[in-house]
Picture 1 (tube, rainbow, N blue to C red):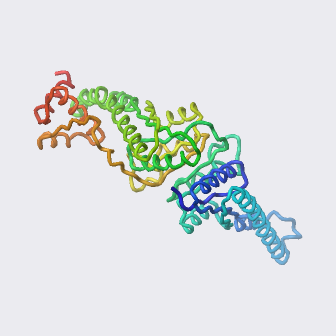
Picture 2 (picture 1 turned 135 degrees about the vertical axis):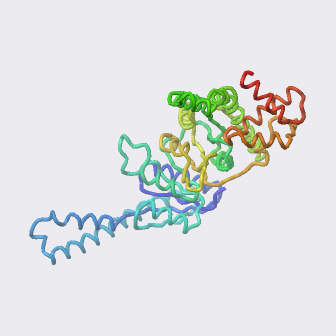
Picture 3 (picture 1 turned 90 degrees about the vertical axis):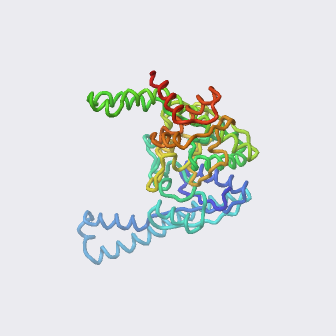
Length: 394
């Protein structure tokens, strides 16, 4: 698991929760634990200078301003450093009582920037921090520091809530290497916290139907013929929407196999609906202890810092959330669910390649299912056309 953990300290309830989780992980895994508090003396000094125009006239003289600045600078810098040392001292005592000897550091500067810099300099593989800090207000769901660190960190990020629910560790699976890396992390954490694991996958059968209803309202009759709208709509309703469930069930089967190979038994649950909404509702329903996400999903691009499902969930979930930044490709990730292999002719493969990428796997599974039902060992171009005619009702 983790070798170096950075825990961010500000003495808030959420920060203290992050510290407690980090001490537990470090104690169980013998990882190096680093406590860090960031204070912003220069920011306070800059704000003071901005306020000088509002000082009484007797303090506006240059000599008086110079003296006031020096006094303020000394008091603020020393004061904030004393506060920072107090935070780290409390953390040090807590960790030491659990048999962990941490390293404690204080940094001056912009909080999220200094946290990221410290994590990189220390070679950390996990950054742990509270969901909310001392600036919490009733309408807050996640603090700016937690969100900025989660977006930019190269490491895994643990965002701590304040309630240790009694439920399992959930791990969100979408078939991406990032989600399977999250599964591996969840397996390790289940041993640390003595919690069961449940892998969940959510697919959205409504999106394509809504999209086609929208398209139907704007396409002209000629555009509809060119787009082959009726055929496309039937493809989605009869194949894609139904096939999505099968694909995501396959991802969960792969997750169960990965867990089994690691000596862990997991429960799997398939959810239907918008992924982030369904995961949030399900996690709250079962009082999940923690939800683990891959940083990005199947639609990741090089410029993407975090996937929409992970982002939406880390903002709204009340339990602990872990964002995994690694990747793992299971050996059986692309194994067919049916052991009886089906071959394809070159011409049939060429036809399959012309199908939009997002639908290709679903169509392939549908064609192979039809071939197995008919006892056909090789999919030919003519068989593909036959299946298509059946789909179109011809």
